[in-house]
Length: 226
Image (cartoon, rainbow, N blue to C red; front, top):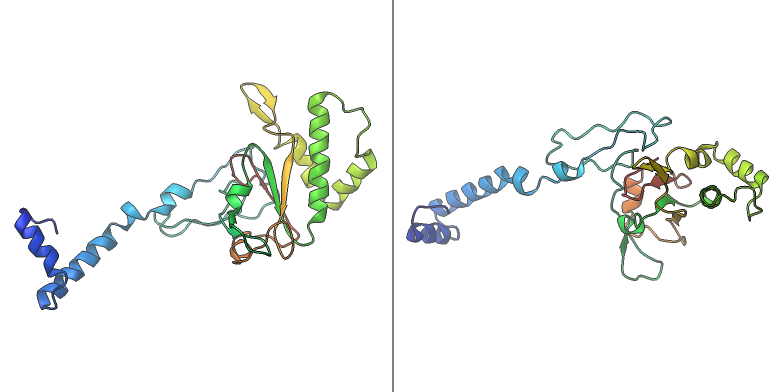
């Protein structure tokens, strides 16, 4: 195809549709050339395989991190391990409408919690953490609110103190020397049969790497925090 003259390039192009041995050879050379360019044009791994290792993600109770593919430049390692990008999965409603990506449910200045069937306690804990953050930032920690102390303790006990503990570890961010919170609300989405969103294509089930009643906490930049 990259012959030196216009006439030669035109002849080479026409030869691609020829049923001759020369045409067969030309098509084989073209296919080989396309394959050799995969790292240049299809290298999804080099764009998507970033991974955070810092105190801004919680890995203390995690297993060993996933191994990258044999060719990390070409292939994207989809994972919900702390520090990874939130995987994309198409979701929809029971009565189909325009699908939405898990990526679009996260971000927008909020921490986001994903859970599923049986994960109601995570929703309760997220609401309690949201309220505690709002009260601590506004300086009204001693005021009466919708969540009493014993309710906070019960939520913490149900989830081994982990999610509530994140309120004082991951959630506040240090920005220019000042502790700030991108948003005082933790968005929560339940994914599953007759929940907030349905995993109609089973993409999320394949990629979430947690049980239905587990949870994934995502930072505002759509990086998995825990």
